Amino acid sequence: MRDILHCDLNNFYASCECIKNPKLKGLPVAVGGKQEDRHGVIVASNYEAKKFGVRCGVTVFNAKRLCPNIVICTPNFKLYNEMSQRVRKIYERYTDQVEAFSIDECFLDVTHSKIFGSPKEIADKIREDVKRETGLTISVGVSFNKTFAKIGSDLKKPDATSVITPENFKEIVWQLPIGDMFGVGRKMKEKLLAYNVNTIGDLAHFNKQFLTDQFGKMGTELYEKANGIDDEPVKFVTDKTEIKSVGNSTTFYKDLSDRKEIELAFMVIAENIVYRMIKKGLASAHTLSIVVKDENLKVYQKQCQFPPCRSSKVFAETAIKLFFANYKDMKVRLLGISVTGFDESNQISMFEQTENTNEVDDVVYKIRNKFGRSSLQRGVALNNEKIAHTFDREQLDKEFNDDEQ
Image (cartoon, rainbow, N blue to C red; front, side, top):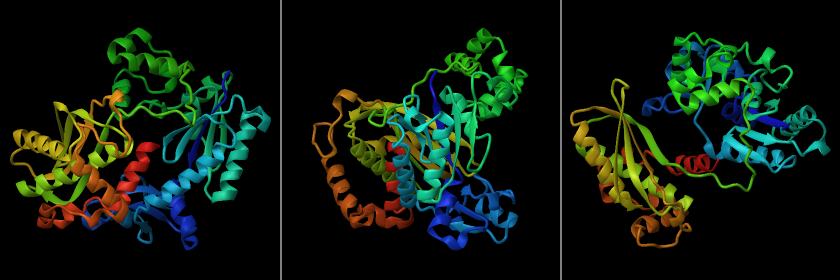
């Protein structure tokens, strides 16, 4: 029997802002993008703001309408990453099996940490350590697998420990709505509800073969996890995470329709893709996909393959060809690129040169990494500096760090 914890930092971004500026304590606080640059969406809020209905995904405009005295903070990803790392170091005092699920969530396997007490006692000690040393609070789910530990951390908030055991999981978990099941997203929820699967208990009692036939491997896994069957291990701190894709997208300050603006946007995004590949030691990719959101918020995707490379020029030109071959007269709100098809045997060190490497991209990366993104610009960027500077240094740091987590 394993002892798994899922630690979830409460209102993480907003809590970090309140710690940085104690004057915000007790006030409704949210973190969101700049409304004037079309990034005006709330990404986090504290409990004082949530009382007014200000939650993740609400626009900044509506947040101010719901709560006129709300304090909107611009995202400070450097601060969030620093705080996340501090908390993770606390986790590592108790076990070397610490697996980041996101910047504010981690799984811990404390099966062999009995020297610190029972699993619940360990969870409570971690909560106290985090609160005392950082000012942040966490909710912890304690269970015998990752699925139920994740569900447990959502049962009581903030600053609480919930325990789900083989003896009580049917009583606790099975009564929860199907949307609370770890691994059930919005689309899967809609499909399950259509089959009258309304609770996790309904899922646990559903016909396993039917779920497998309808949803493949995912259907089988959901059925088993609902019944407490989940042996997925918690990774060790030293484990390397397999990189399946590298992507980058952004919403622009206005709808783009001019060809030169769209080309510049793809060039900026392609550069960021390459920089992230350099940082990860990836030498090449052979599949590229673009994501496009139009003025009506409808999303489109297209994909193609090409000879393996790691070149912002090739990535941008490929993305541009894909776009204009499929979406000629579209007003664009968001653009994105992602690349896949990495050859693990062909990974390189950050600055090692190979025949697959674009040396110009490497040199530009080194200069910008040391002196800032604005230290070296392409001439075409002068045509529209707002697009060229869509990704500033802090945003790139966030993307790099998020990927590593």
